[in-house]
Image 1 (cartoon, rainbow, N blue to C red):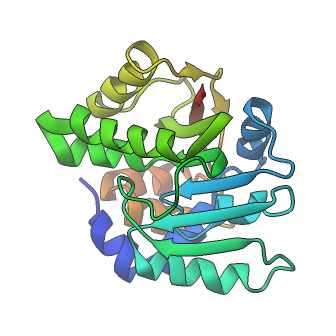
Image 2 (spheres, helix red, strand yellow):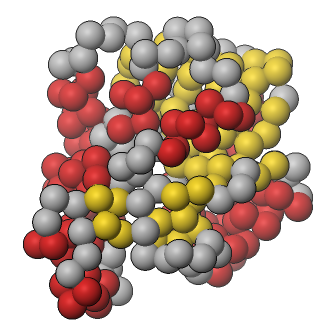
Length: 235
């Protein structure tokens, strides 16, 4: 059971969420994997569910532009504060749902989404395929010819052996690969590195569960393993 509902996290605990995201992927493997499946140099990128802008900021030095969207205005306001402190101006942020992005057809060389689809599957329950189809249709509408859709997803937080951590994600990944024609990269590490056991316990307890927080405290962990993969589709 989550200690804090996610809808509250994305509205009222944005700075804590951002700190957790900053601790994620301390070896910077995610960007390496992104650039292994698509050429970001000079690309126009559209980012779905951008959150507080960690990925947005990482790709700014390489791309021509990135337009980032999220349902949470609070998250995007936090992202704006960070991005305005950089030397880059090739970005834009706007509130939007994954199924309705306010952009014209064929405008993106690359589309990125990370981790939000699993929550949409869980929320939609029996109608999850209909919801995911709407998101994928929107991505494909925006994508230029020869463009690439990149979807990042977890294969387990706190895990050393990669596998979908719940049935919703197992179903989603199977659907992307077997029914929607997505390829998948080999799994890779996006481990969290915290500054102290106390910080690790606080952030893990806040985002995941009290039980997970207790485990971090008992084991005195400052590095939390995480397995990740990327699903990608080329137009």
